[in-house]
Image 1 (cartoon, helix red, strand yellow):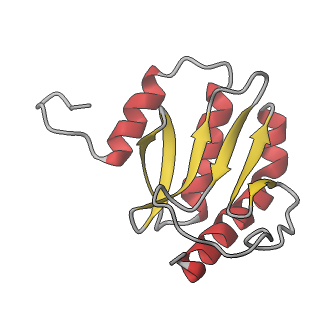
Image 2 (cartoon, one colour; image 1 turned 90 degrees about the horizontal axis):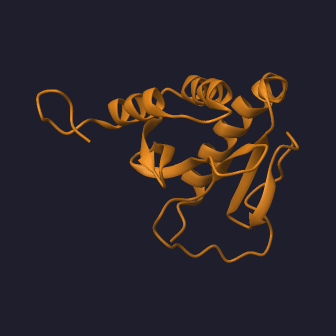
Image 3 (cartoon, helix red, strand yellow; image 1 turned 180 degrees about the vertical axis):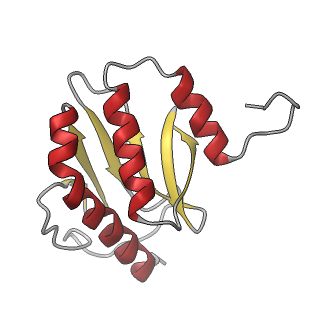
Length: 142
């Protein structure tokens, strides 16, 4: 992706361009969730990964949209693209928000079905984003 001058777009510009061109039945909801995530932690950066917006902390992927659901879209909470060992069968932490659906001990999703669902989950999502970042930075899987 490049801007009008031919320069490579930075991550935020990539996502802005992607969102401008996005044709998706949940575009309004996706934009709202993106805003919520970016407002949750000002250290997050964003770019396009897996053909969707993705959020990084210290240049490590942590949260990525999955826009391919039928009747919903979701966020994937993960620990980056580098394979790291996590020597436990238990989830990274106890999710007191109840939003996470654990796929593995270090990967989970949150689904959104409509704008009311996004609004209803907003405060819990902010807490969850910050908890995920805190735990994944603490553990820095070696």
